[in-house]
Structures are given as C-alpha cells and as structure tokens.
Amino acid sequence: MLVSRITKFKKLQSENAILRKKLRRHYRHHDIITKNPRMEELLALTQDVASLRSTVLIRGESGTGKELVARAIHFSGSRAQKPFVAVSCAALTETLLESELFGYEKGAFTGAVGQAKGKFELADAGTIFLDEIGDISPKLQSDLLRVLQELRFYRVGGTEEVEVDVRVIAATNSNLAEAVQQGRFREDLYYRLNVIEICLPPLRERREDIPLLAEHFVQRISSELGKDIGSISSAALKLLIAYDWPGNVRELENVIERAIVTCRNGTLEEQDFSWLPRQPIAGQNWDVPDVPLNELERRAIIAALERKHGNVKEASASLGIDRSTLYDKLKRYAIAH
Image 1 (cartoon, rainbow, N blue to C red):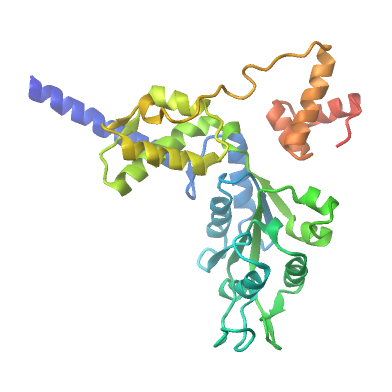
Image 2 (image 1 turned 60 degrees about the horizontal axis):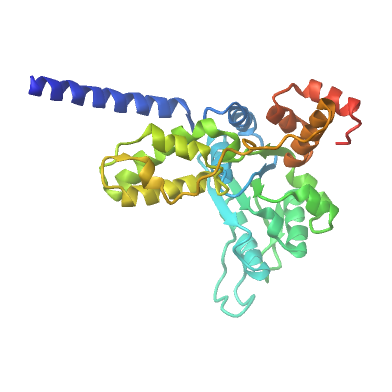
C-alpha cells in the first residue's frame, strides 16, 4: 500500500510538472511570459512590425522587459538570422558612446592603435537596440538623426563614409515627448524614432502574470543554483501579487532568487519572503473625496491620461472602457489631450 501511494504521488508530481510546462509554453512568446490582454495586444503588434524596417520606440519603466520585446521583434522577422546588437546609451560617456556606436580609425584618439568597427557596422543587415535613448547628448542626437535618415556615417577620425542596412529599435524609461518640450531632446529625432510606439505596462498593472513569472523563475533559478525547489505556495503567491513591484519583472526575478538561496525545503513559502515590504494593492485604502460622482469620473480620467502620458488608447484600457467612450467623456468634461 505504501509503495502504491508513493507511485501514485510520483505520477501526480510528474503530471503536474508536465502541465506546468505546457501552461508556460502556452503563455510564452519569445521569452515573454504573459496572459495579460494588453501585453497580448502589444505582442501581436510586434509580430505585425517584425519584418518591416520601420523604427520602433519601446517605452516602459525600468525592469519591464524592453530588451526582451526588442529581441522578440528581431527574431520574429526577416532579419532573425542576422545580428542583434544591444547598446546601453546610459552606461557610457558621450565620447565613448560615439566610438562605440560608429567605430574609430587608427590614431583617432590616444589608445586607438587600429581601426575598430562600431555597433552600427556590427549590426549591418540586422537590428541595433539602443537602450535608454533619452540619455544621449545633443551632439549624438544630431549624429543619430543623420544615420537614421541616410543610413551612413563616419567612423571617429575617419574620412570615408560607411553605409549600413540596420533596423533601429530604441527604448526609454523617460517621457521623450516631455523632454522635447523642455528642449532636452530633438523633436525631429523623436519623430524619426517614434514611427511605431510600444508602451509596456508595469508589472503592478498586469498582476495576473505574477504567478506565471514566479513559477518560471523558480524553475529556472533553482536549476541554475542546483537547489531542489519545485514550486511556490499559494500563500507566497498571494503575498507577491499584493506587492507593487517598483522594479517590475527584474525585481521579481531578484526576489525569487534571494528566496531560493535561503529556502530550507522544496517549496517557497510565505516566510521565505518575510523581508519583502508588506503593502496593500494600490488604491485599496483610497479615501473617496466628498465631490459629485461626475467630478470623480473627471478626476479619474485626468489621472489615467497623466499616467499614460496622454495616450488615449492606453488610458481607456486602464479605465476599462472603449476608446470611443473615453473620447465622448473627454468632450463632455472639456479635458484637453
């Protein structure tokens, strides 16, 4: 009887693992795991634009997975077999970033002992991903605009033009439209980059993805660390879902890794996340102001537009209404957008 119970238990464990793998595959798109409707729409858009040469601007908070989306676009399209080259524009000074992007000739500066190709040349026929594009200097903004317009440039210290065929995908966690208004970012470059815009929602606005992501990270990280941890308890998941994740998916991954390192059994329990700040879901304890109902609605619409940087489509989705309905309400309340 004992052997029979053990056999049945192991069979159930195996079936459960298989079902979990199938579930993850069902909600997985080029390493992006989601069942959120907004994310599904964005991923469908990545498929639509994958084989185009149009420039894409991906907006989203730090840790939302902007590079994953860029890779999904590249590897879904006709350039999938060509290079994908990622550059962090915030990590380098203006001079270093210029030589990193465009390369340099021998003797261009101290230490330039030979010719070196830049990232644009290395990405020829493929895709270059420019992360944190909002941090580049005015000079580099001008140089980048010329590359986008003419697909040619000079290496640092060079006299011969280099011509490339590169698809550009840029990303930022800042509001470039606001930077343009403040004179910190070139308007012509902004419109050249913003041909196709993809705005990634933060993790707190796609909480249904937290269990999927948590299970994925448990399986992957426990395997990498050589720890026999197979799952995460429902109580622990409830705690994770209630947290607002200011660092988004990257923070969730780091939290799961820390919990796995300190875990003493085969399942992550609530106590394994005892150090995680406890907080209510945003808006749970909101005090309702003493104003008429239509004024509440007006304030909610204004707040949604501010959160989505004036994007009516995203604001209507966050409010749970059709875009046409939101336009009617904008007109009724005389709200500029």
